[in-house]
Image 1: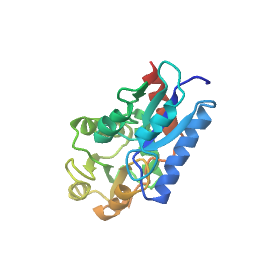
Image 2: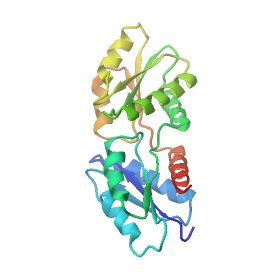
Image 3: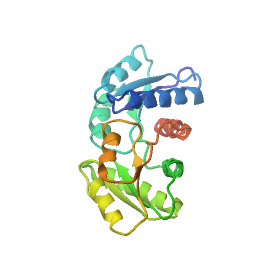
Image 4: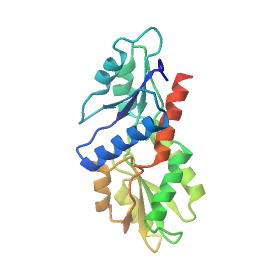
Length: 230
């Protein structure tokens, strides 16, 4: 893939060693699936390199035409996609791809995580998303919620870690009030970190593992990259 625009895989960034390992594994999965494509890591917070610096480095010595695609390793749009990543590509021969979600494959991973955690149709499931003040992000989570409801035989509601409502603890309490055998939180988060750690305090009986690592995530990243090139 010599001459193809560099794929700048941009994650949020975390102080969690486990979370960093998941992001590294995802980036390596992308490289394995597309040999010869140059893939670089970038972050919007906490870790380096910052996405603007990573894009600048990817453009060094670039020829005419599109030279870089920033693929957000983020589950929905919001300030990081619109502002941080948007600013990193503005006025440069670079474009931003769409975030990972919504995508039916993410709902498929959620079903796997629920099954792995021992959840059944007798449990009440709360889809736990990070949350955003951006209405488009809430719509995106709603799309994944609908897709999960199609695939999962029991009741599924939603809660958010921040900004949007209801918060996860409230959603868990409301689910428990329905008389379900157990309440299971389905973590709609990419990797371990602050938000995933906070789910343990929401009052559920079980919290699933986050989405990553999973091979389908790398396929979504590359689909977003290809769509941005088109």
